[in-house]
Length: 308
Image (tube, rainbow, N blue to C red; front, top):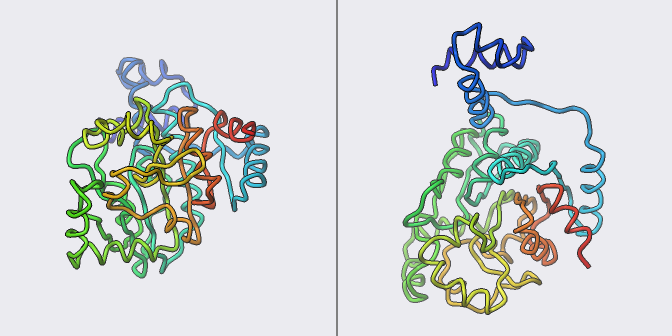
């Protein structure tokens, strides 16, 4: 996309109040091309729209969630019919929440995934030389759709901060290999830093077709056993039951990531996740008290309030 053309399209639409067809006629483009340019500008953060009118239903759910689950804060966004759009708007709302909480000198820990990647569009660039960012999870050895170290790298660049990577697979081949990797001074130092963060931004996963983690070969072959053991989803790669307790399974013993119980000790933490497919695991995480702040969509928020 030509930046000069994209800038004109965005200006005419958002500032000039022209219709997409008027912009197409003015710039000699097709209406479909204009529509795609506007969609891309929203997706990559080139254009950000701020709504200053409160959404009463969402505000009521935010207050209800905070009171019921003992949260320090909650943000609820309206439902979106498309799953990718839902991830994007939840991520952007989480980015706004994170942006307000950032201070120089903080140690910031992040997970990975599409929702967290979308959050970066709403974080204001700054120069926080006294801060540092650390990835809280190991990475995938194969996959598509997202780079498992992308979120930590881009957040560190946005903050002008140093970045530390947990440069190991999220699941080691065996417990023995995990123990051996932890003797590496570099990896043990990164895990130590992960346990020292004062602010964390994480997401969670389930077993639906939308799950990046569950679709990976190292997890997919274990899904029947995980479900049989009572797993409803994962937090930072650790599989939890409906009450939020880690299940008994080999993957949980071979994981290279910050443990949920360690996340619970982080002073400021944000869980950004949505979609009714994740309502059960989100409730498990809140029930166990692993996070202090939640960003989700309206349908999940209502399900959390309606849960017995």
